Amino acid sequence: MTLPEQRRILKTAIPGPRSVALQEQRTAELAGGLGVTLPVFVDHAGGGILVDVDGNHLVDLASGIAVTSVGAAHPEVARRVADQVERFTHTCFLVTEYEGFVQVAAALNRLTPGDHDKRTALFTTGAEAVENAIKIARTYTGRDAVVVLGHAYHGRTLLTMSMTAKNVPYKQGFGPFAPEIHRVPSPYPFRWPGGPAAAAEEALGQLREVITTQIGAENVAAIVVEPIQGEGGFIVPPPGYLAGVADFAREHGIVFVADEIQTGLARTGDLFACEHEGVVPDIITTAKALAGGLPLSAVTGRAEIMDAVGAGGLGGTYAGNPVACAAALAVLEVIERDGLVERARHIESIVRPRLEALQAEGSPIGEVRGRGAMLAMEFVRPGTLEPAPDLAKAVSDDCHAQGVVTLVCGTFGNVIRLLPPLVIDDDLLEDALTVLEQAVRRTYA
Ligand SMILES: *Cc1c(COP(=O)(O)O)cnc(C)c1O
Image (tube, rainbow, N blue to C red):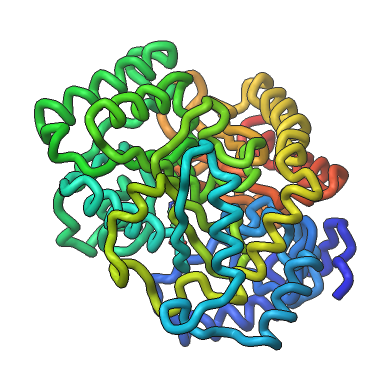
């Protein structure tokens, strides 16, 4: 299929009549717990455009939550997937094997930070990768406790929602939660009581204190950190924090797990966000962008840690599905061949100055932050730190009405995050930013 025209085109109101009709059916048929950001039904997509069932061309600044970095219909992904589907769709890797699984593992062992001996296990969802990282770390250390951060997001399964910080909508009513999860403060520079310059050192001090006095370092299996917190609000840890956590973990025999499910694979302008600070995690989890939209996740780590679990202890019926592996091999090739790490930096060079100029106008943007093609703005009541989720929602709704797909995130629901496909055209991106600027100006000018 040819790429849809890479231009924003509005033929109807958003959502259009066909989407509205489908939405009525959805409401009648689907469980109410399934939310939606923009009730528009997509017909086809590609590059930076989603074409809906009413023929509108929407600019995609979400990438299905950082998944379709190579676009939602990259020809190389489509070709490899079609070829694999014709050969076979499934064997269960635990029953009989196939080469794609091994090739994806080899690529991740090669590409992830650190040149130590590594091993990889593939799964299906991000939450499953995090769960398995914990299973592996617990077996390796013989310890139970898991330390996570405030504002963390790690998934929706019992263990990972227990690790997730935010109550509504992720946890409310879903307890009791998994035991042995301990939370330490996230060094959120914008909101750190002692100011951003003190955040790294003070947060590290609190982490050390909680672990040594409350849990006992000898009881901690893993510390799990997102190198940039995603759902929590695109919170970039202050310089030195990640390295400090990694050092503390090493000192105490704790497995340092970097959850790079949202940040990984070129999104932040490096292949992995840990690399910005030269931090080498013991275990790294990946998913989202890994297979261009097909469900695939991975746990990659030091060989001696990964091999701690005995044969049969890890797996899953669909883990490392061959169609998803074929897609991942295409994605990893496209990232290298088409220079998507550099593309992410180029996107930052376009987006960041425009967001910063918008902030400087006196708009209710408290902070512009993020890295590469993972940028966000946090809305507050002017001159205060008081979150303004109503403004973030108003801006996002306005963008949606104009055919630009934006996402809100953050513990306080007051952050608009931009996650364009890394292959988006410059002109299309500039057009979407103009829509976004106008939407922000309407909230205060
Ligand atoms: C999305 C996400 C997950 C969960 O991935 P699923 O595929 O939705 O289970 C875990 N960790 C982080 C950092 C994420 O962004």
